Image (cartoon, rainbow, N blue to C red; front, side, top):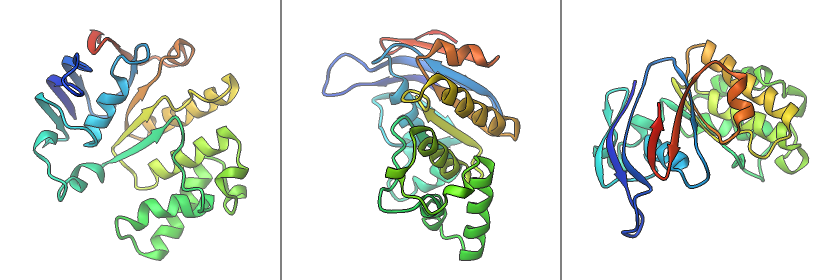
Amino acid sequence: MIQVFNVVKMYDGSNPVLDNVSLDIADGEFVFLTGPSGAGKTTILKILFGWERFEKGQVLVQGINVGKLTYRNIYTLRRSMGVVFQDYKLLPNKTVFENVSFAQEVIGRDRKTIRFKTWEALKNVGLTPKKDAYPAYLSGGEQQRVAIARAMVNSPSIILADEPTGNLDPDISIEIFKLFEELNQKGATIIFATHSQDIIRLGNHRVISLNRGKVVTS
């Protein structure tokens, strides 16, 4: 499913952000990616999604060689992925329903399918009563649920989560984590980046630990 071979990533010729990193994540696996701030967690996720280039190594996602993708064909990679961020990244001028719908509009789905899939996704995260609300009027936990609905609406085989509970209180964090476990049980491969040991203890999943751009446990 996901294979990372000896990847080196640098910014401005400085010390490597990723230093000879290798990973192997199986289809349908739930993996925690952990380590202190600056360890390289977010950079790995960005590389997997094609947001960041890298200097050395090879990255394969579902057989796609990420390093050889161009701007014109990057969609072949991203259509199989959903991404959830710590800061939600919702469109402030769109309602909950419109935020989730937009993820389908960009891939050209018809209006009937978009409406059905959006309702289904909002129902799965318990947000149908908030469908007409704007992000500014939602709690942090509700905004993160919208982000998860948006990530799952296209039924991606891989979901990348970058500190998705980092801004939430403990009780809400547990609820959000359970949503990711449900997605995993339905077949999605989950890479869940977090520095929270409390979250890691909630699930019996493999932990990949990073420190200063190196894998220290996997």
